[in-house]
Amino acid sequence: MPDPAVAEIQDLSFAYNRQPVLHRIRLSIPQGKVVAVMGQSGCGKTTLLRIIAAALLPSHGSARVLGQDTRVLDRDGLYALRRRLGMLFQFGALFTDMTVYENVAFQMREHTALPEDTIRDLVLMKLEAVGLRGATERMPGELSGGMARRVALARAIALDPELILYDEPFTGLDPIALGVIARLVRQLNDSLGATSIIVTHDVAETLPLVDYVYFMADGRVVAEGTPADVRRSGVAFVEQFVNGRIDGPVPFHYPAAGYAADLGLAQAA
Amino acid sequence: MNAIASALARLGAAVTAGVWRLGYATRFFGYLLLHSGTAFRRFHLTMREIYFAGVLSLIIILVSGLFVGMVLALQGYETLQRYGSSEALGILVALSLVRELGPVVAGLLFASRAGSAITAEIGLMKATEQLSAMEMMAVDPVARVVAPRFWGGVISMPLLAALFSAMGIFGGYLVGVVLIGVDEGAFWSQMQAAVDVRNDILNGVIKSVVFGVAVTLIAVFEGYDAPPTAEGVSGATTRTVVTSSLAILALDFVLTALMFTGGNAK
Image (cartoon, rainbow over all chains, first blue to last red; front, top):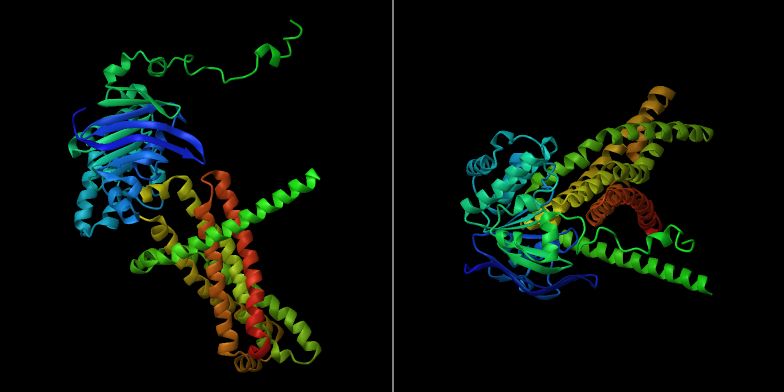
């Protein structure tokens, strides 16, 4: 991966209340690429995304994002960095007291001195990009899950971010909405000249659209490579995850005492 | 021995947690005051909250004020007529409302109607990641969401208390003068002569401002600190109403002791 890195994670560890979550993570996100971080729920991938977004600081190691070491940023530096990021939350996190239009205009009004006419044009352009120019006056509560996710995407790209972070963008969507979001992720990344990091466990939708994949298990990166590499991977966990096998390194059964003993049959036998 | 030790440990943990939370709330209040600039620079944000906390509370405040004033007049007349001083009904109604019942009852109603709504709204914004989204957009949620709600509540509360008292006096007039037949001239003139702007009205306004700060601070803090779950938001909303009500009654005692006793008494 020869392109310059937009985000560089070096030897990063993280613990919540002394409970280790991430161990010695190293990864590099090259400019212009769409990179997926995949793994089971609870493997630490959302924590990793929050560290890249500088919402959490590493306990050990470093995270350099857009050339900034997140550990040394003060509040102003942090906010300056975040103005260059866009983030799509798992369920959109739209402001429920604002219309679709106001949601997308929010950052423009907060961070720029643009006249209202220009903001209007920009908002309509962003909404056109996600196919929802006709829904400007709708409230978030009136949108379907897929539409809400698309509005959130328009809001995330409102200020043309250099790095877009996606936290489980495909969760809870019907197949059509899922396909739309997947296509938009790739399209917006390429048209904006941005870089994207997708945290997800959705194999079928993710592998065709990303350039590179990191697989995580138990807070560690256990495999990485292009989607083709991943499909051919000999790592047992990756093989189980990609093919959705119910048993393997991740066992079907939660560890428990012997079944017969639990049923009170062991002594009789 | 073990039971005593564990009871002491639980008591210690509860006290430590309470003190820690009080310290956290104080730091939160300091941060809120420091980041209140947006609430005044972009005053339309605060105006919106004055509408939700103040204007939408008007009905309950006005109707309650009317009935409290009517009951005061009925009860007051019953007592005053025994001593042949039923003309003093205006004084009794006005002083009771302006000094005590106006700020206290309006504060209790404000805590139930607006305080609980503020906590639930901020708590739900937290639970649905709206506050995190704002943080990620480099917008401070305390400055953008919490401060306008805080100042909206602080501005609304004294106005609501004043309207409560005015409506209560009108209710007292309806029952005392129109219904029972107390002399109208005596009702108003005695009230005018006895109610002092500084000792009565200003002290009532000070009380309502203090209650406004206490209730709204508790409401925004509980919402901001609520665990991001359905039970968390529900618990925070309940705590807002209970803590605010107790805070109003306790502060009322302290303020009354400072204002209306000793050298300051009329």
